Length: 104
Image 1 (cartoon, rainbow, N blue to C red):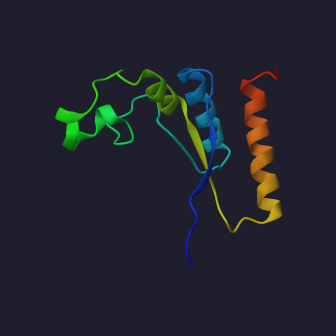
Image 2: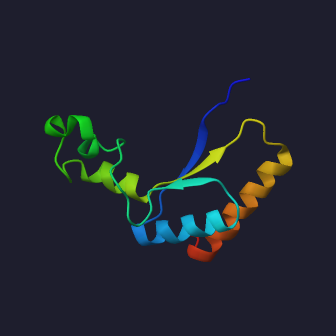
């Protein structure tokens, strides 16, 4: 059986908020990915593709992409989740976001 790699992406307003939300989602038991406060090189950013560094854009050459990637929180979604699993994940996300965000 194969695995499908879907995820839900959140893009908080700033890096500080992203780090706080990511920490609380992890603490609540969700499997998430976030760049974190002290990231090392990452090949997802053109400026950090180590084998191609001579030929890649300089830091901040793609500021919008860099900013989004640095703020992104990715929540892995499993194709085998039950309806109950989905409700639990949604409730957890809503609970954490309610602690950090105000509805607009």
